[in-house]
Length: 369
Ligand code: ADP
Ligand code: MG
Image 1: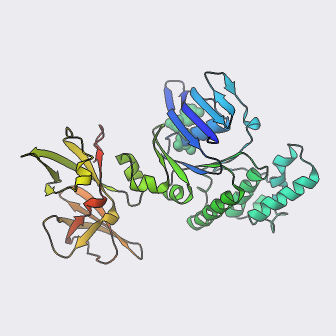
Image 2 (image 1 turned 180 degrees about the vertical axis):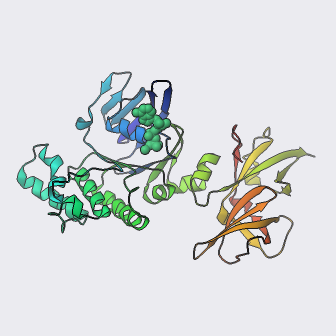
Image 3 (image 1 turned 30 degrees about the horizontal axis):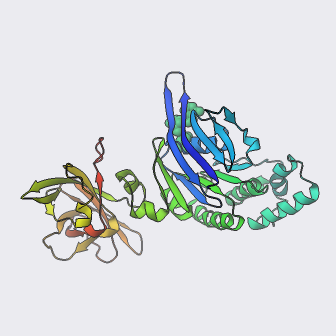
């Protein structure tokens, strides 16, 4: 059985003039020792979900349980207080006690739980060593760098060996380089300690590098749950397809025609042949769908061919080993990654889409292009 089980959870907030549905029909399970990421755009309900797990908010419906213990259930009128859940939490704006030194900050949660002095000293030292803070134990927070302060907050959260470790965008305040190194340390530490962790971020790179699995949220519901590879390789819809990956997957409007018992596909004016694997995914009644192609699966060719498309280059971003090229064909934008041919802005080039690596999606009701 999974460690954390969330079933059909919902949360509505009532404000003076309206009701906000922050979460609806959230069902997910987190395994023991798993690093589970809640990913999604700002306002999609990530923090609300984390607060419900911590017990800081009460659900409007559904149930949360850890092992055999029900944490919250609206129907059964159960709500276990945050302090009785053995959960540790680190926020983006974590607050350290400024008048206490590093050792005292880490020790604080042990002290209020009445753990003996001898045990406390040993536990603080263990946590400090793991987070490379043993040399700054006597320093006050004001004397530390941003990265060190963040590590103190993490040490303080994990020192009492919680059954669940919740982090809400904990690295957002750090600069890019520090964010990457802290990310690595956090992942190593989590695996070493084996603490089941739920990590909230809006940053897909952070989610892809940290998560054993990711739940991608959008507008209060779950779009897809899976490993980073599953979300990248098999996105279930156009939202997942374009949220994961940078630059995002290209989406082209595809008009399906049925003539002489054959399907024809027109992509922005160019007739192309789709491989059977893609044709099988298209519902026969569908007339307009989306064809998704990742930038790395589009190639610039020196010569035109029967399935090449001519585009005009509008922008170039050199990243070192590879270059991102932005182009347009009529009014449709396309981005691709090239590692050898780098054209000039304004130049016309021919491109070929690798349709064996393409995806088809239903066109959503609200237009995306
Ligand atoms: P995220 O963390 O993904 O950015 P939140 O969980 O903070 O999103 O918010 C989800 C939605 O719920 C937003 O529309 C937000 O405005 C709303 N919301 C969150 N907390 C409250 C609250 N206490 N009162 C009213 N609305 C809230
Ligand atoms: Mg948030």
